[in-house]
Amino acid sequence: MDSIARIQRGQPPYVLDDEVAARLEAESTEILRERIEELRARTLRRVDRVLQKYDPAAPYPTPGSGASSGRQLP
Image (cartoon, rainbow, N blue to C red; front, side):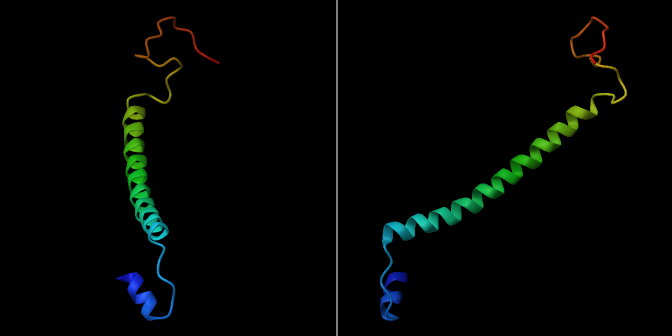
């Protein structure tokens, strides 16, 4: 119908393959942007939960990290 309307206005019809590709690109780009933002937010929340488990003032390696030598890393 869009192509017919273009012809009625004296414009060339759409090249269907190009038009479908352009519309798919526009729609999928927005969907991907939203999904990436959701993933980013979820990842940052997970990082925050992990970081809350550790005492920032503790020497390295932190307790519970599996290192038992008692040495501090530079």
